[in-house]
Length: 349
Image 1: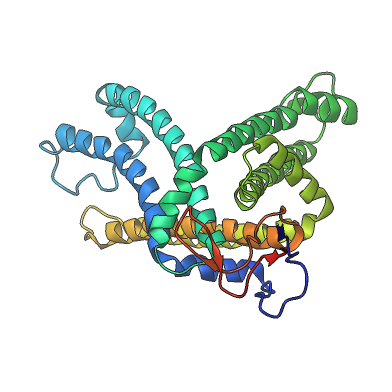
Image 2 (image 1 turned 120 degrees about the horizontal axis):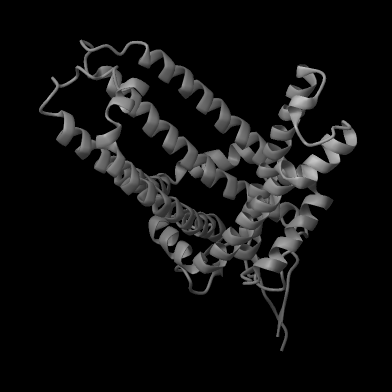
C-alpha cells in the first residue's frame, strides 16, 4: 500500500519557490518559444481570416480606380461615408463572421490554457509542442465549462455595476436622485467622479473574475478533477484566505502588460504621424511589426499568468492524496510519471 508524502515537508531535493513569481513565470514562458509561437499563431490565424476579406474588397473596389498608396491617409470617416453603399454588404457579411471568430477565439483560449498548464505541470524538458496540444485536448471540455461560468459571472457583474442595483443603491439612495440620471446631479464634477468610480469598479471586478477563471483552471489541472463548480468555489475561498499571495503575481503581470501596450500605442501614434501619400512602405512595416509584437507579448503574458497560478497554487494549496504534482518527473504525456529526485511512494508489505 502506498503512503502519501506531504510535499510541504522540508526536502533539500525539492526546488524552492522563486521569490519573485512573476519574473520566474515570464522567464519560463519566454523559454518555451515553440509553445508561445503556436499559441500566437492560433489567434493570428483568426485575425487573418477577418482581415483578408476586407483586403480583397478594397483591392476589388478601389484597386483599379486609385493609384496605389494615394489613399494611405484618406481612409477616414469621410471616405467610409462616401463608400457606405459599397461597404454595406461587406459590413453585414463580416459582422456575422466576427461573431463566429470571437466565439472561436474564446474556445482557443480554453484550449491554449490546457496546453500551458500541461507544459508547466509536467516539469519535463523537450516535446513542449506535443505536450501543449495534448494538454489542450485533455482539459478542453472542463475549461469550456469554466469559460461558461466566467461569462455568467461577467454578465452578473455588468448587471450589478451598470444595472438596477447601482442605480438604486448609489444614485437613488446615496445621492438622493429622483431617478437614476447623472444629469440630475448638481455638480458635473460629482457626476464624473461617480462615472469614473463605476467604470473603475467594473474594471476591478473584471480583473478578479478573470483571475478566478485562471486559478479555477489551474486547480482543475493540478488536482486532475472535473467539477468546475467545486473548483470555482475553492478558488473563491482561496481569494478570501490568501488574497495577496494569490493575486499579487497576476496584478504585476497585468501592469507589465498594460505598460507595454501603452508604449506600443505611443509608437503607433508617432508612426501614423509620418504617414503621407508619398511616404515609403517602412511606416506600414513598422505598424505591422508593432502589432505583431504586441500580440506576441500578450500571448507570453497569458502563458506567464498560468505559470504564476501554478506556482501560487503550489505555495498555498495542499495537493490531493495522489503522487506529488510539484515534483520533477519524467514520462510521456498522459502516461505514468516517474519522479527524478527520489521516490514519491513508501511501500509497506
